[in-house]
Image (cartoon, rainbow, N blue to C red; front, side, top):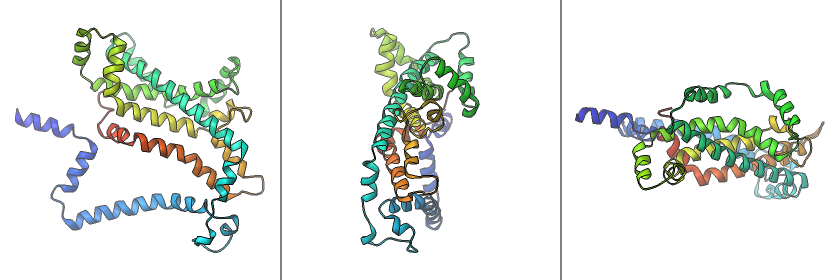
Length: 301
């Protein structure tokens, strides 16, 4: 019995725990240094372009076209940020992106949570078919449904509206969010549901007071992924948005390039500003995301 318990405990360890155990399991100092050296080089390779992009945002156009690679302190300026932030169209695109991404994430999490709870806790005909259909939607290339989707939104008079874009983004986010959250809900013992019922809780009370708090890592993963998809989307917005009133930040990057020239310092500055909200969001939810990815939330689906 002790052997079975030990085996089960080992198989349930998170990815991070297994990696830590691998690093500390009879590893010589030389090998440990080698592992961290390789990882450091890998991350330096990934971060070097990002770091240089940030550096360029604090330089002028004259510096970019000079043979100098690294700017001096005298070359650094915040003029690019002031120029971009004072561009009226870019400000509007930023507001549109926030409204659309937050609305899409909220709608996806609410609908996905309710759907995942139903699929996890209720047995009904076609349950597995619904799950497979959710997964099948992720296999279709987006360009395959662009024209039908445009015609549908046009018939519903939702072209060039926040609602139309939010629905379009949610169509892609809800299936994946439901699939992710169902895995977390499946890992929560049904005995907690039964105990709550005995205390007089309704199904919704059980969901919001027990299931949701215990599934915060999964909700954080689904929400963060949905937010990024909506924030970075260009293709759907390009066909559903007809005016600047509903265009988002990916369109804002076009403000700093013309047919013959590209203001690289302004373009990279705008791209940096576009990244900031995602980085800030990740800073707030990173503990939940790491826990969600490491705890095996996909188990049981």
